[in-house]
Image (tube, one colour):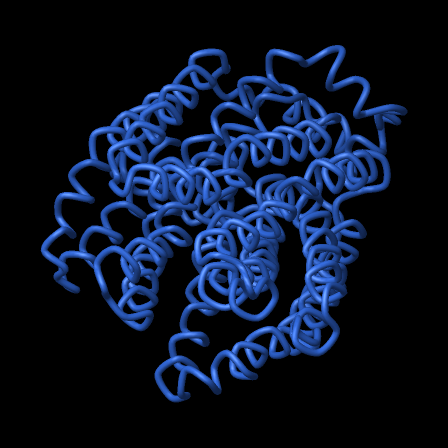
Length: 445
């Protein structure tokens, strides 16, 4: 007799839906490559760009200008969400994901080849902002498709785990980006790093993008979208339908992203500024701490997603958001002794809180919308939240620190972001899988 917790051979085969593993790897790999591009810009905006693209200003003014260019990438995301979200629900997930990968990759390589202010003057920061705009548009269309790619091939009842594939992309990309920059910073002089070393990380993305394209071009369309096509249920105006038929879902999904976005900006962007300027630590110390924290996230994010398949997703997400508000003052207290070990531990814990929100985030957002509107709805929620979350967070962090010289208001800002996310979770709904089960059953009938 088979034990209750054991599966029969036939059941074991059914555990992994056809194409699910390939889609999981493709989703993870693609977003890792794209967020590598995005992450190297994030680090460079804190450590490099103020000096070579915005020179001649007060130190904090240059930093604010650089973070403003950083914010453009977030502000551009809704454009990508509208353009590619609409296409993703009308023509499918696969073709859109190929275009977004190419858009981000080309923009990143061009940033690596861009002459600085000393060579072409004001044209340098203008071109930097335009290329950052292109990056943002690509990322705005990428996330929704990558999430649907893995979740719509996977088991709908285990969406937390399957959707987490795309969520592993940011820490994996961040890991690669900070690893490359850490090696360059450690092996080059400050003059060489500022002169040409940082460009190596941007130019190297060309190889990564080619690798990503080879994977995505071999993918099939997702079973759920095929079923929608078979029933002729593609929306004619998906963006309009999301705003008119799913306003509560859109608000709930967007607000749920605010705290994770702000928290990630703190531990991957602003911490580099605070630790080097306020505490006197080296750039290498900070990059190593972020590197280690990102490595832990590679395992914590899928674990958190899987956990919410067993327990209430909104509850787990909400506990992590509330924990974030309590942890931030503790983090700043931990690092006042200027200990590298405490900085590293603090970043690891901070990014762990992020993982327990970010892991289930993709599943939570996509399940707020019906299958036929998922790409548009998820992309809009993701990108609109970025405008009020991650886009302005480094600017607000820098402005608050410049005005007060301490971290108290920064902790208050994170507490506010946590409250906003909890409100979004309260407005949302729990997983519902009956619609896509119906589509798939009817398509195979």
